[in-house]
Length: 450
Image (cartoon, rainbow, N blue to C red; front, side, top):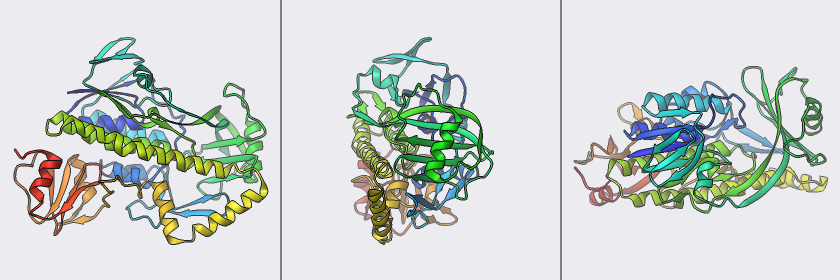
């Protein structure tokens, strides 16, 4: 089976690496001719780090950035990530290009092909068409961003609207670094966010309610300084911009993530405001959900209908992310002083309630997101000296049980345990039960034994 992934961003690269690891013929088509360090994503959340841990990449990525265990919103509202039940109870601040480099290296090492300078012009039933020719494909995954050529080729609608216009973006040097790793605040007419690259450069996002200009309007550093000072009280001695631009933020989601043999993932399927830093993370989690299902169908032990669960599991998550990020950005943009004071007072009080704090931290981090029939399975230690997410690196289901079943060595990793738990390759629980129920559960989830 041949799979073509369109887009060599984080979503497409994780998917390609997983398919290559499973022995699937996979090609990635990327319009860009070279890697860029001009990136919008800066935060890697806990659930994404768990997915990277299941691929042996998390510890290396953590070494590139700075963990933040508490998120400060609206000056006084704080979300405590340190209470999360995970090896990674924090938000990792690291530029997107570090994620891409790790995932690209892994994909190439496992045998995926990456074709750069490939502009997709259309699809036909058995191939992806580019300016240079046709690339045979049994399955196609569009991970090619908000302006997805794959989505356009299949005529999939992308309903929604713009929520923020004229967001300013700048890469700058600062004379005085912010006290906190993340500096973020909104004062009604102005919003600003400052995060470090880690190499002396800082990324600034800012927005000015009083100056809504088109994306094409020129932007200078003085305008960025002014908005940052209004939002944060200082511009940190901002100087030497290497990149300045404007963009707008939409809230959109496709109605279907699958159409025939074509799938949409990441920003090709859903886009939303940058609030919460959820975009790249949601795309990577899309890829982790889809990749093992495509691999299972390619290997012949799973029916094509398994692929329909990508829609039923991930579309509701995309809708949740749109609501969460949209709610955050609307709270940040409250205009009146009284409304902002009420937001801060109520938000601060609610987040002191443990159940509400856990819910908020779980939603933002992804740790609290379950599927209806497959809850997230936390990492657990396993004898003699291992843990669950290390065993998931084989890309197969993991069975925790008192004894190993016969006939599933090609689809299953076994670990000694006093309970019966079947864990999917994406770290969600497929089944729990008893020894008597195990043969039926294995057939249902893994097909007949050899």
